[in-house]
Image (cartoon, rainbow, N blue to C red; front, side, top):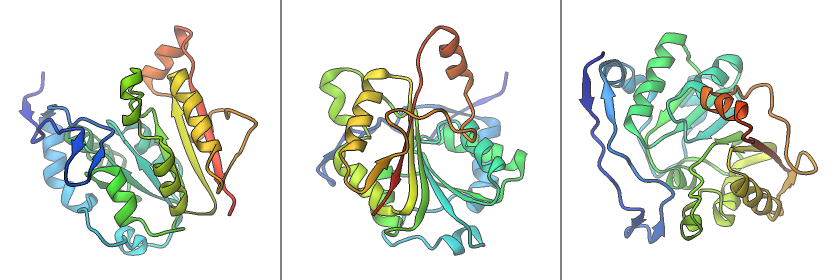
Length: 239
């Protein structure tokens, strides 16, 4: 069993008084494995970008011009790394707040020799608002965000009208927003919220088939075997 190192994360208030808004996440006090800590130390300076309040220059950050896809909530990184390896002609910018997840994805970047992936460890709303220029993204991925399934917590869900409007403004015309969830109630709410955004059009009549580029995770496969559903939604910016 590998040595465990405490992650340098503290539990964070959902309500940030400096921003006067409800956050959609809690920074859990996870623990870093030795490999994750090593990846943070050795690969973090190369692949992690600091938060800034000015738009990121993608060509400079990735050291090449290429279509750029934003992924919000990379988790432990397996899906992100798999897609980045499959779509090597595209740049991928991942946003994740949890340190063990960032360390895990950095480790995968090293193992897979991925040069088209960069990470930002910061709140996604602030990253999209301050670091992503309007009409600059080819795509946005949001896979299995926290469903906040209690009714009183729904206001903390990431997919809300104002944030969808902000996300859409960062997509170029023809760009796509791809969400996936394994909670039917959240899927129905996503369909409603995305459908209400006038600059977006659903690529299907309702839910989409899972695109080939999105791999199934071990937890998703386990749920599918138990009869649990998974819902993908792919919307396109039209104007």
